[in-house]
Amino acid sequence: MKNYTLLSVLENSTEKFANNPALSWVDDEPMTFSQANEKIQQLKVLLNKQGIISEDRVAILSENMPNWAIAYFAVTSMGAVAVPILPDFHPNEIHHILRHSESKAIFVSEKLYEKLEEEEFEKLNSIILMDDFSLIPPRTKRDALRDVVKERTKEFAKLKAAALKMAGLRNDEIKEDDLAAIIYTSGTTGKSKGVMLTHKNVVYDAYATTLIVKVAPNDRLLSVLPLSHTYECTLGLVIPFMQGSCVYYMNKPPIARVLLPAMQKIRPTMMLTVPLIIEKIYKLRILPQLTKSTLLKQLTKIEPVRKKIIQLAGKKLLKSFGGELHFFGIGGSAVSPEVEKFMREAKFPYAIGYGLTETSPLIAGTDPTKTRYRSTGPALPGVQVKIDKPDPKTGEGEILVKGPSVMRGYYNDDEQTKSVFTEDGWFRTGDLGVLDENDYLYIKGRLKNMILGPSGENIYPEQIEYIINENDSVLESLVYQQENKLVARVFLNYEELDKEFSAQKLTETQIHNEIKTILENIRTDVNNRVSTFSRISKIIEQTEPFEKTPTQKVKRYLYA
Image (cartoon, rainbow, N blue to C red; front, side):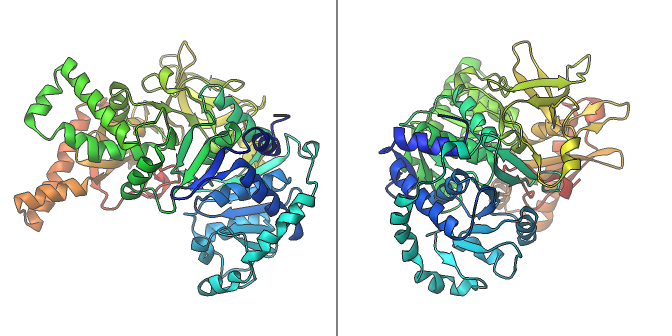
């Protein structure tokens, strides 16, 4: 590439991989890089006709689809700024983002249009339907949407000739330090912030990642995470686009009955996921098989036999993913020790990455052949990581980062921007970690989540949660401090418990007492395995799944 810009990525890939498959629905024929570029150029003409010029903000509110990628590259390669919005955001949050970012246009899918229809926005001049790139007239109601845009679907096709005549922007008109995107986070602390990422931030992070993980033109990626999150956008879209690989999208949420057939059809070679996905597969599908009989339980206690059994389970798991996976990336939060241990013993091709929206996102990672238990791996090439004020005994301290992938700052928020950078330009991640002698990074937890014990001890709730979650009856947990005591909320594996209770023909009262016993047994087991200052005083039953961020981290501020 000539430079670290998304325009350069687009031009380079169109030239090198013109006839390679680029983007597709799971059940469709993929469009090639040449065809994708053609649609991108048409869309740039449409945006230009709507008055969109360099530096204008253009929002994207849509579930994953090939056209999401087309819209993203069209906006960024013409010098405008993409404002991806998470589909799960409440309408109030979406309206705030549109006003705060001063977006002049928005791409919105038919499914999400109702989140916009009742509101008017002073700066928003154009609404474009993501499904077919037709223009939506102002004040169109959701139930009339199809009829209104039906007459306009041919307009986009007419732009083909105009796109061919349009010279477009030259490379030197989009600079590496120009703003490419503003990403509004939905963090575990509650307040959304507009993270400003430049072209160089995004493209350098993608490029540096390809230096540690091989991505080839014949790779196939199945997308399961929201493209509006930097994790999926940079690593799951920009990287494959840069390397000539093909990305497949599902038109339904990635639940098991949709995901498994898709994996068998596409046979992905690479996937990006969050811990919850593999943890659920392990807890609901693998663990019951390993513990279904007393004999099998006993056999897994014999080390050589255990290894064989686990490796057979790993082969079966790999086959369920289509059989051709060579990279299973896990990010967004830490995976449980129990599940990581299984993946290592099963020789499953996993790798754990660490990053933040503010760092475009990847900070540290490795490929599956170089993983170390509980580590994310070393920092990316060209990215510096250091531990601030490390504890003399443990080496733990806040993780600081510096490098080409670190954001410009928070949009229209100088005070917040200043607070996350040191005087000499290091970005404060808010995470606690340790670097070993080989510069492998180990994440200990969030600085804001850390609880001070009675004598000033550092208590990491995440580490207690790992132990709680090892219990077969538990799916999720949350540990926090209440009146100077540690409390845990636990969401049980009700699917399995219901089967057990039904088989035993228990009454409602008996079920209630049984659950109380289970919770107390969990508390006793955990307290036997942790330090005195980390013991749980009370366990509360969480009857509904915890509310989570797009990367499936529990929104702690809602409960603690």
